[in-house]
Length: 474
Ligand SMILES: Cc1ncc(COP(=O)(O)O)c(C=O)c1O
Image 1 (cartoon, protein in one colour):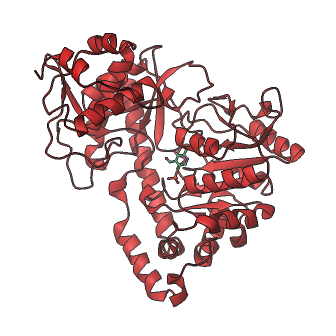
Image 2 (cartoon, rainbow, N blue to C red):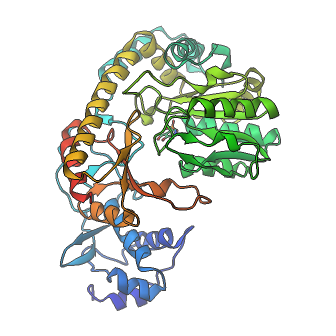
Image 3 (cartoon, helix red, strand yellow):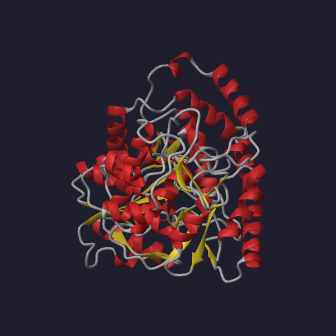
């Protein structure tokens, strides 16, 4: 019975729930496995069969299968088709690919990707545990009793003070402690800005045509529309702000130092155009400086905020430079926004830990942060060079871009091949993402590419991950 796809189709009543067909199918399959209606080892119908049964495109089913293989729900082997994975216990977080742990050497295990080259996460195995612990010990020893209270929603003065000095020195930000609001990750800062902009009557926030859907969702949930500005290798077309289609825009969200995910830096004339637009109409620029510390080939591109601190909201984070699990980030605000943002944060601020802020302040003041960033910059640069060399040797027709900075690179693919490359990577236990995953819904599809997060694997898995990547390239 397990091999009978018709039984599966008829008896399980797969109800496609979710925002799209692919997600709906994935949800339905996960639900069927989680609920025990599809047991381990059950063979699923071929993608062609299930597509016909459900009346959806075959690619939709193939993509859903590949994603569920990557997540560990299904396994796929040549000759024996796609089956429900055998596993001892259900996974607590089925949607996320868990990166390799620090001590675990990469061993193929059914269901779990052996290698992870998805962008977005730094090498977690390199978290400076000893130095962080040392800073935490010192910070807690010296903390006044009041530090353990509810505190100021703006964040601990100790951290804001050292951060102001660091941001001015390392990123060219005009920062004073009283202009800084600490938050729990960039997403928290963006959520607060969404509330404040909405309350100010902003109807539209322009975003880049490639970016992160979780960020767009936050803006949308604040009740704000988000038209997309075209973005390319030389950054985002800020000269279009104020023009046709962008007349109602009150703010623009951008990644000027290193566009995510396409990888370019915003060119000087486009930086100037953004600031001119903001000055002319009272607009705001939300600058997402998520990985500004990691620049390899020339002097770091300074923060756009330096051009006009009264028109730019600078948002920085420790998620790339240290670890996203810390949930530590900061906003440097125009003077007239500070009170509104602090008030918005004060209403819901159950999320920022004062003791972590004190630890970060000590970590930064002691020089450990600069040391860590410098060491990681060397390490990521070495990986980037190895990636470029390996691709040049094994897949000479593949063009790489976006390599001057950050922890990811873009590998162009022949037109129409992105999904099949991703599928074959998933079948081989390599977690990867394509550029179209990051495309704004209003942006037409113009390219196929991989966004390779070379910073993600621990050192022990890096060469294996690189080899696996080269195997799936055309
Ligand atoms: C473009 C971009 N912005 C910001 C962030 C940081 O987000 P957070 O500070 O919420 O972890 C990331 C992390 O992946 C990112 O890719």
